Length: 350
Image (tube, rainbow, N blue to C red; front, side):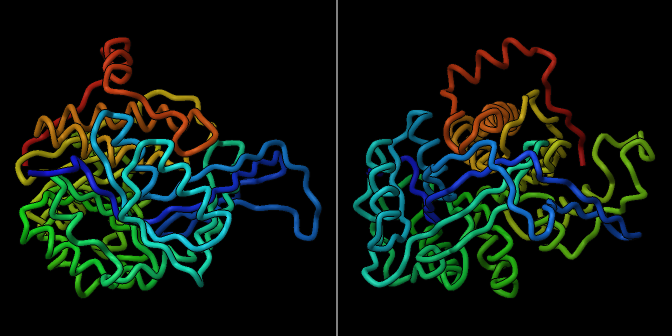
């Protein structure tokens, strides 16, 4: 009998949020793409308008969200022997997350991130991976994986990506459902091994940039949604979804910032627009979306409902300064959807 509803594996960090009105957004456009950069005057001393210290990281953010939604949850992360580790452990314990599977290192520093927030609400993250990059397979309590119904794999970094194969294979051998959020580090370091890993996933979630990186496919900037009015999804994104679906037996979900999110199950394509919000910081929105989608789908097998609930929870998170402050319960999400009856998911047969 399963002991946990969800077990998360990934990173845990001390996040330092910094907001300054001096930040500028610079766009660089090329024929094949468009990039945006956060810029500051070189050599200047800038005033900070707002700052905060929070505990975050993909595994801890999602574990706390699963718990807030009412599920028995445990996490496997790696922390050092420092004040940051104590704060991470205290946060997990205060959220009633099972912490006995957390890995402790006596000689390494825990993860730390500095988040630079712009006036648009988006952010640039300066990350010291620390112990998040050194979680080895032999340090993982695999018995804990056997005791969970769903395993949620948050993005792994550095040498921690070497554990992906064993984790995914073990989950498959023991009939544990797997939801995986890859991240750029896993895509770069595990590209040749990813086909075997992804085939085991019931749900595969990533953002648009990661989807492009994994498929080696571009989304043409001159092919706007208006240019293809007979599609409700950009045709290049449809091609990416098809390519991703070929890699896995499960559901493919691709988030696309202000454009919303797309999903594909091999039979239908889905698009869910961004739920209305007044953004303060986008950090944690991806974790909120991915874990809420996984939580709802685990109970309903309903992609449309999962997209809607996940979009509402993610929108709530971006309205707060911190990755966990905006988490909603199922009842709170349902109420917001009832107050916004026009918020719907579009569907198209393959």
